[in-house]
Image 1 (tube, rainbow, N blue to C red):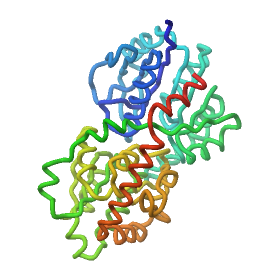
Image 2 (cartoon, rainbow, N blue to C red):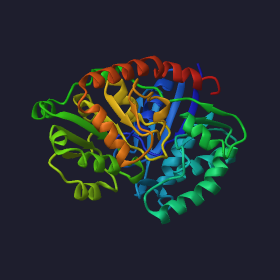
Image 3 (tube, helix red, strand yellow):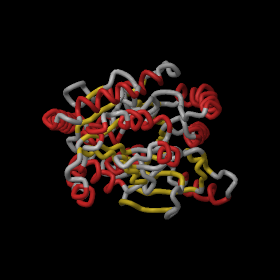
Image 4 (cartoon, rainbow, N blue to C red):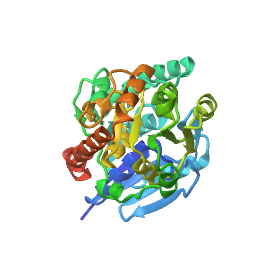
Length: 378
């Protein structure tokens, strides 16, 4: 049997950690099991093997790149980049796939697809213009989106939005059909993760709260931390707030929110991050805007955690207030404080919300269902 080939231009890929990276890997793995030959073309950040065969039908090619403000930029001026790209195009793909217009590699995929007359599928994961907290960077990013980003979204052969929020954003630029396909989860593998014994034993008498994600402005962690520090001292001292992740705001957050009840655990691998989430009672989704559907949020739901969430980044599509979590009315310290005060002292509510969240994920986020949706047009 001749296998169909897909060349995926991914903005990051494991061992780089993040929800988007997990999404690409799991998607590629499941598609490779359906008689598709997958080649991932991705930045070599952090530096590891340039060419790696993960499965029989799944290969990764990692090109030289530099990270600028948390975003990867290919080293086009390096001969090694073009040699590795030549290896990728020798696969003669039937389809080209790019993910998220924010990253320049999506434009490179667009050009490649047009020049080679290959069908281009774009999977969009952003639901707003980029927000970094720096007005100049935000302005440059918006200009890029309104020119190159708009070109990509309007002209690709097939466009997939990973949530309703993404769909509504893409609709501003694209008149043609847009498919909504949410990501899947490896629910069985996630459930096998064990709790973190060290943290569980050390803080066994505390209510454990956690945030997992990149420490960048639009993830909004600062408002959650501000509101936590405003809680009555008696309640605050019954809790510990774990922050898992790294990024441009890490130093700023550590200096501004240094407190005996807030623990910055840094960047860890995915398995350890999940073990920390499993150990905790409450998971915080604090995003301002920008993302499509948070992977860490879905994983926390899969682990049966009680969620406090802002409506952004697809949360209002999976968090049904007082059912699968607490959905805040807006992004503000006052709303976070209200959520903390409702949930932290109510173990019965924590259990109820976690149970319903877990059941919702089980029923709606299996990879088999998601891959079937993709197979309709690839």
